[in-house]
View: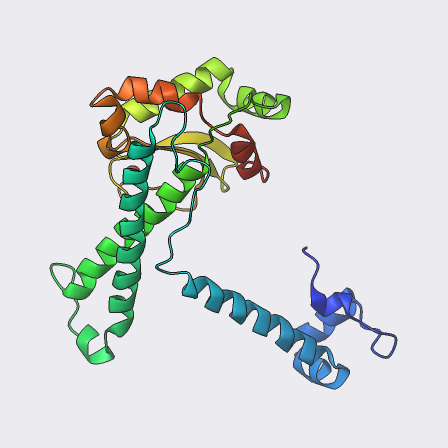
Length: 256
Ligand SMILES: [Fe+2]
């Protein structure tokens, strides 16, 4: 169980250990104890911190991330290509912000007649997923690119060997996934089955498995490589493979 400020701050005056707390909580006495022991103010403080974090995160809606390492281009992807792609990503960030605001603005009266054939609220929900995934997937994609790629660590090689049999098999699955799809190829980790596998999306919100954590994301929309490679996706993928920051991939796999 993760540590909690609630328990870390027990004092001699309030010798309340974790087991005691849960016993009392089960008896419905926790709120009384929290109030009388001073722990209530600590719990309120933790709650306020959570609320602050939510407010801060919401304030970032509409603010695109920067990717200074790659903005000037990297081996195999020109500055012109990457900057055009970043502008497209920034458009998704703005659009997601405006859709979110429109959704929040609906009144209960306006929502009374929503249906699944057509309603502006329904259309916003559909496009919200598209825009949000457009933001998140691009951030994951840009985040694994580097101008200074280094070989995989022995740990990462071992992990990928364990899941795919060999690095060659892993690379073949990656390239095949990227050739097979119209939008995205994703190496993802499924916490439910502790399974590492490739997934494919034909658009930002099409075929995205619930709860799967993206680890390595490849944008295969033509806008990702058209300026540099025309329609030659294979050459783009070949260049991309050489510019993957495996330290980022490894960090994203730290929970496996
Ligand atoms: Fe893209």
